Amino acid sequence: MKRVKAVVVGAGVVGLSTAVRVAEALPYCSVTVIAEKFSPDTTGDGAAGILLAKEFPDIPIERQRRWFKETFDHLLAIADSPQAADAGVYLSSGYHVFKEIPCEKKPYWSDFVFGFRYMTDHEMKRFPNHKFGQAFTTLKCECLSYLPWLEKRFRAVGGQIIYEKVTDLHKLAQNYDAILNCSGLGSRFLVKDEEVYPVRGQMLKISAPWLKNFVRDGDGLTYIYPGIRYVNIGGTRQADDWRMEVDKEDSKGILERCCQLEPSLRASQVMGEWVGLRPTRANPRVEREYLYVQGRQVPLVHNYGHGSCGVTLSWGTALDTLDLLRQSLSEKPPQARL
Image (cartoon, rainbow, N blue to C red):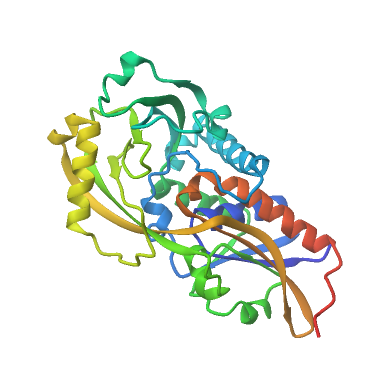
């Protein structure tokens, strides 16, 4: 098979996962990643990186299960290997507590994490403002380590890196045989997708080395995630909010909510604050189309819009992207439109 030039647009956790999967699976492909920002300046670098997922309304649940399982299995293999420390991937145990009993008491991903169970009345006494809880062990992936590790893995199989802002996919298609669009929020401008929008997230980094277990509130906002370097506490979910500046009122509210969940945090020290814009869509876009450029049909595979599930689903949606690319390269392209 002739050498195929593929380009991945975007170098966040979704983009680099996609680049690695393609470069390792298709030796006849030369793969280049083009992005304006790389680690430590991507949205993923500030992500808490705990593997939990929400359910997307219009994607078959079996596909979502596969995305989660693929990512969980991939990261678990790293956590169980000598690469764990360099990659920043490890097991993390804790609690998901709710002020009201949720309609879906057992989420679809509960089959893949370890030891999922409902919390006992005795355990729930620690959380007097909550009525129901789930206990389990999942994985935590710290992107400040994981993204450089992925980039190193990508380069090891001949992957190329270009620091550049992409503004025109048709222009890019003149030089590549396939485009994999992992531009996240940038897709709002790059492919004119107004269904992708920012959800502003703010969190604090605190020093609280005595905390070993995560706690997440069912409100979807409040969480405490112990990490290697510090504890992440958050957060906010502010839709269509493009502000990248730290909001001191948000920080104050985050700290207060988290101290209610875990009173020992009142003795902790704030080490830093972070803001990121989650590239959110009602459903992630993982699908294929074609660009028609100079008489050529160039496959364009989209993989973006994961919102707060970027780390959680990254390896799974990268596999779907690889499959769509493989199909595109083996099939006869559709006839150009007149």
